[in-house]
Length: 288
Image (cartoon, rainbow, N blue to C red):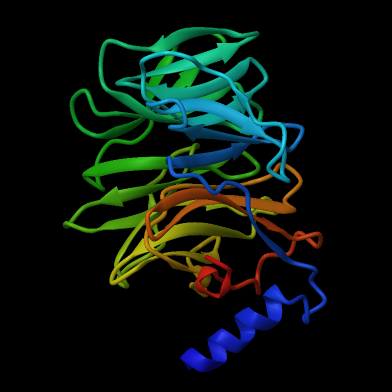
């Protein structure tokens, strides 16, 4: 089974399947670079420790044109684009960067994981000031709403479906993180994963047909599954650890951070077809 999987991986990476998939290491630095996402025009947003603590940067999808966006003493991570600016986590709050100016939008508590809705009007975030709950913020004002009461007991890592009607998230009820999905219109959340190790950091595939998530057991990997948890399968293998990932707006690029050895770097998968269902990549087959 292992040998067969390695053969499939090699064929995909070499382009023998006709997919034209490319595996690109965008950064290779002694400092940490992580938490990638995309701007509306397809550039990569990320956080880098190049100048000490994490600040926000962006670059082109070929690794050129790097530019620093924030300069402060905060720990700036998890950037995400909205029509109003870039929202991100800094320290124990959520901030927005617009026209070169940064301002707080959630402070005075412990707020994290800001994820904008597809239309950019709403922000789903984690409020750990009391219980670890998912909340919504209307960027047009200061209206806040608790998204879900009841199980699972702890919640984190919200991710919007492409149509904005559902939010996938990681939940813990009995000591293990699993992936759940909830409809914004109400109803109990649906558990999508069970067993096989911890599951968190969900990201929807842009066509809405599936979810990519981080799976941690004996090793840390990215897996993908159908939108209701069907057919779970490996997606990115061969890393020591990884934290977050994101698809480009056109669905043809996939960025993720991964540690191999001492370096935590940004990687990119280029897939001109935009069809990710049969893609399996093993970073162990890539040059060091």
